[in-house]
Amino acid sequence: NRTTCSALLPLHTVNVQGSGNGESYQEQLSRLEGDKESLVLQVSVLTDQVEVQGEKIRDLENSLGEYQHKLNSTEDRLQQELLNRSSLESQKLGLMEEVPGLKLKAIATLNCENATITCIFPVLRMKRPGVLSDDIEPIQFKRGGFRATAGPRLIRAPDSGRSSRAHTSFSKWTTEQVCGWLEDIGLGQYVSLARQWVDSGQTLLSATPRDLEKEICIKHPLHRKKLQLALRAFSNKTMEKSSELDHIWVTHWLDDIGLPQYKDQFYESKVDGRMLQYLTVNDLLFLKVTSQLHHLSIKCAIHVLHVNKFNPNCLRRRPGDENKTSPSEVVQWSNHRVMEWLRSVDLAEYAPNLRGSGVHGGLIILEPRFHSETLAMLLNIPPQKTLLRRHLTTNFNTLVGPQAQQEKQEFANASGHTPLTTTAKVRPKKLGFTHFRQLRKLRMDESADYICPMDTWNPPAMSGTPKRRYGSFRGILARDSDRLEQVGNAI
Image 1 (cartoon, rainbow, N blue to C red):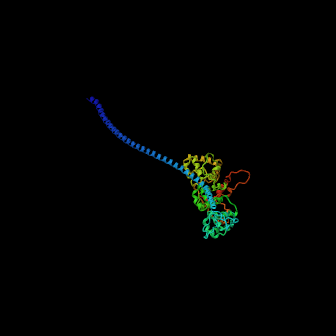
Image 2: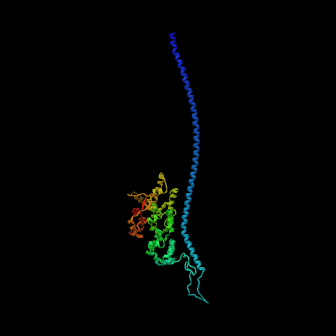
Image 3: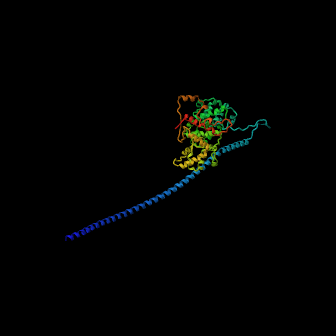
């Protein structure tokens, strides 16, 4: 019995363990089935979320496509607007060029009308009873002459005395002739006081600036300077070519060099062609021109006028063959012509940024600190657009030519070189007491702060060596910048 019990005991133990293992397997199986159901539920939830996100992505892609279409259509409209504006500007320039011809036609028409009037009213001859007097001179009609009228002459005839002024010395001009001349040069607001003070032209020739301010109230410094320059021309008996350019022409010239924002100041100050060649740094500051870049723009533009002997039509406004341009032609480009060049090199979207910048051909060629980087800043081309800036640099170097490019590079590598920025300003330098004493001793022709000094445009000596038309402009720039800083400090 003891042996039988000992043999059955292991079998019973195995059965108990087997039943215990069976129960643990059942629990694991049920747990795994529960996990499976939860995973299936999670997968279904995630599938729903993925479908929702997919729908959102499709909606965003549709919105992106619509916005892209709108952007493309807006860019097309903008490009069309730029082309329309360019054509309108070209038409405007064409009309402005036709204005002088229309004025000449109007003058010719007026002369024809005067001749017709002379023919309508025949020459009157004195008659005696029964005898026709042939020995009496006919009475000729004279426009602007005095009429046999009982009433007073309230206003001056437009052309009275102009023909007689041309053959009479200024010192012998009458009061009416002097007043008529003041109106012709744009200083008509001083005629009423001048008529009371001026006895003859000699009165103005011998007048001091203090007399002009006291007697006829010329307190505007540029009006006084304009009158003094004109009187000095009469005293020296020299007629400069610049005197033929009036203050209205100067306002059109500001349009050509890209500085139309100063037209009102120049017009109110009656700045004419003669004043341009004697324009100083302080004069520009008085005209509210404070940008250093605009100072340089006006300086280069005046030099171009000097070289071309103040030819009013020396600037090129119309586009030509872009493949046959030379620096000698580029230096005479107007601001609008530079914008046309930008359009020809596929930079039309940036061309409108040059309006009011003062960029013209003279500044591009003659100013050694004006580089392609300066032009890129004025065009507002972002620095990160390196390919676009490289494209601009390549075309800019081709435009200015190898000689000007080399001179610009040499100037940039020189010691003490200051890069040209678009934000630099010019301020008048504060003068001490000793400087005022020196200024009192200076006469008008001894001023050393001209924007374009006389030695930059004097013709070279006849040494037999040919020189470039604009070669005298170079070499004085370093000294000229020192002179500029003596008069104004750039900030």
